[in-house]
Image 1: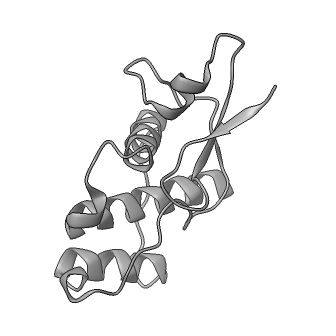
Image 2 (image 1 turned 120 degrees about the horizontal axis):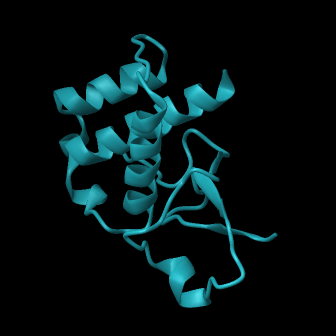
Length: 122
């Protein structure tokens, strides 16, 4: 099976296994029925290059920075939560949200990506 990347940056967080009925157009769009149960984590920091612009130094972004440096920790409580986080990150990487203009949303994507990575690393 081939895999398809969904990302607005250089690398994507997850790789989705393509099915025979996937088309080029559907690989670029995020469908409502998209599932991430067959997704695999490739890179906890992939997908976006987060800048150091002044607007990115609010408290939420500082928490994301501390989380990525392992100064604070968090865990996902249930597998359903992990699936929801994967769906959120895939949708964000597909451009469904305006991540670049919303520092809090950018931080949420960074934290979600890291949580997914940590869950799969264990």
